[in-house]
Image 1 (tube, rainbow, N blue to C red):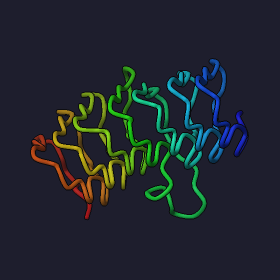
Image 2 (spheres, rainbow, N blue to C red):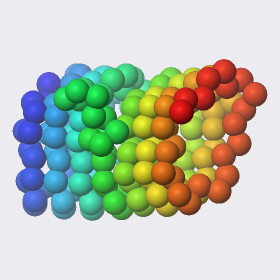
Image 3 (tube, rainbow, N blue to C red):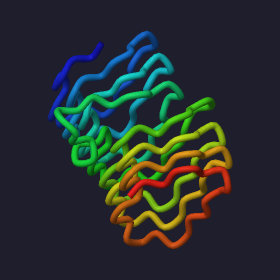
Length: 173
């Protein structure tokens, strides 16, 4: 476990390699680490607190482990306090094999993201997952996607193309 606020605002921190065995990263654990260019999230990680990597503006890419299932928030604020909230230069997001669900609010407010490909293993995109990704232009959806949660793509003002597969059974608000 990496505790809440553990490395918050460590302005010179450039790299965070989280070892295998860590299952939880607390609220705002690395928020505001403005020099961070690289993070490694282990496959063992399943719970990540809101804002854990928020405002890490030097971060340009991230690989999401398959077993992230939950984001911990204070109340229902994941949309405004997502794991990578306001990482303005985060442009490349890849998902490890086997991911089934994209957690609520995880990428909210990322303005550097222009294209996202949802892997075929994903069956659900939770609420607010890509809220306010204002430069997102293209979403390539999973062919196995069943649920798109409330506000999942709200205020994605540049979104030009989103082809939704026949298997989707629920689209939120």
